[in-house]
Image (cartoon, rainbow, N blue to C red; front, top):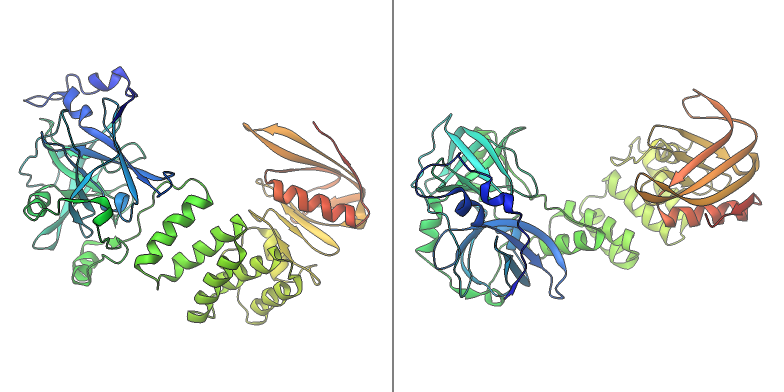
Length: 447
């Protein structure tokens, strides 16, 4: 166990004057912990919150945060870090996991016997944040599973945190696997935890046989969910980068190999990492099950482009036009130009975020403000390329000088010069390569 103090002193007074009764504001904040889902190599996959509910170290968190974890790390408010935890209970349907921290001594939240009522005032506590709200409705999905719909703000610091009453007693836990209406949050009452702890697992993490949260949508709940206007969905953890995203999707597919949407997303993540063989395998499986998925046909075209099979990519794009289909994931007006055949008859290349499309005789560009245009290489007189700071990051600036004025796609302007700002290095390098191959006078500057 290591110790690292990270919580500001303000946490101790966040609720000063707002709580009454036996549980102090300081104890409420100190009971909230951060739960970190780690890969086997120790890299961080995603983070959530949890909170302590007993003097012997029981901690409640979301099931979707811990499911499939090779390792878990818990950091409590005083800075103590626990790398070894015991799994006491798991509840995929209620999105609850109960862990036990060894050799534990810290403040915890008492559980109230909550019977939620419409209009009742509640508060969601996170890491150094607290949001006030109210109960909107209560829905019973099964005799042992109630969903409380509350008007509460949820963000990265509060998701998975405790919902408490004015006395600082814990009432429930926020879940992201049930989706209510806009501006609403789903809360699972902690009365469900008592039933879970009556059948404790008391197993180390490595012995757990996980059940997918995506496959945990009990069909018996479907009528009640529909009546309540709720739906089950995959949680939306904060994923940082394609590598972390692919790990999370691989985990989901290990439980539910038939999830075509996850396969398509995984293929796209693989493409962006250069794992083309893996991407192709996922795409082929999706198309075998759903050959008319225009979005996945486009994804396969993107894969062929990245592997240099331009003619095959063009045929795939053209097949969509022949069928009268438009891709579901048109990234830009430039992409629409490729699919509809407007000027791209030989090759169609789409890189990264889709703001640059390179063709045999011309390229298309779309900036964030809608400055989209097609330009033939032979109309460019000269190009200067250099890195430059832009909105807190480095982008690659292309200053184009045309032989005659070029109009944008909406024909709102004609210009003899134009500046492109491209953030992706891959796009920058490929555009430079294409310009040079077509004899454009190009100067690269260091800064």
